[in-house]
Image (cartoon, rainbow, N blue to C red; front, top):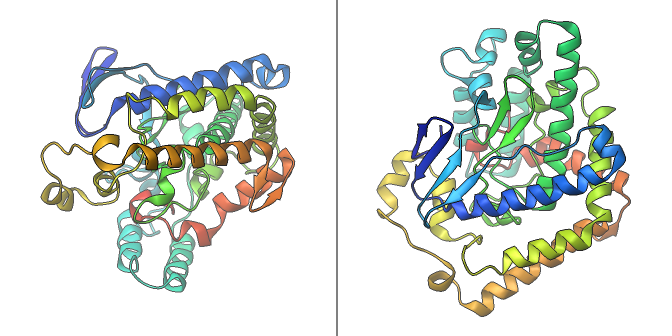
Length: 350
């Protein structure tokens, strides 16, 4: 459960350090993307869409969220201390806590040390997400349909998430619907590639760890996943004018602050004990106090320029077609060298 949440029937009241206006803005972007996907006959046939939830901000520090009924964080299913799938199906493997401690021990060390430790963890922490659909859907036809829905959901949310630069995709920020097997992304406070300027920068375009891939079945990222990624990318690229227009409006909206600041970064990448000792009771750090208007506008211009490049297929200085762009992103997301550089709390081994 997210910090500061209390359930009230189908809705949730949240009061804390997060600004829910960011979540509301991202839901608007997701709605636009869903509309574009619905208009395309091939993506409509594949039922490509992003699961959304309602967000009503009440102030900078509070708001009401729709309760995502029937969902569970993937981290809760996979590595829950009591009965997580890894503990049940791989009792002889490292525990997730052991893996996190190993990565924390080399967090400030050389890249080579991080990489070697991550490879060792990967060898002793094997994926088990395939068992989710096997446990929940005993009928073979339903199991196949739900696994297909899961794969399509991962593909769509990955590509759209990459386009809008959605970060902080750790295992508690991704829910899975226990009835449809679709993913629901929550806590959307890190967007427009702000994850790249965290103290430990995010090095992957989206979460495509071994457990995520394991849930897709024997074909992994090939077949359904790759084709759905390509189709989503094609639709986004063909609709770049509409996407750029809505994002530009949101980036310059004076009512919310999407930029990363030191307190927000500290909040994301510090454990709870350190956090409580470091942060003030009500950290106020907004566009006016932390950035002057001129520097903010320059950041917004860079974000728009990068978004435009993504929608034109410009990656690492090269223009790629949709298939080539998707292939590069999949490689980057699964590269153990990139995963080993991530903040340990992201749990790149899960």
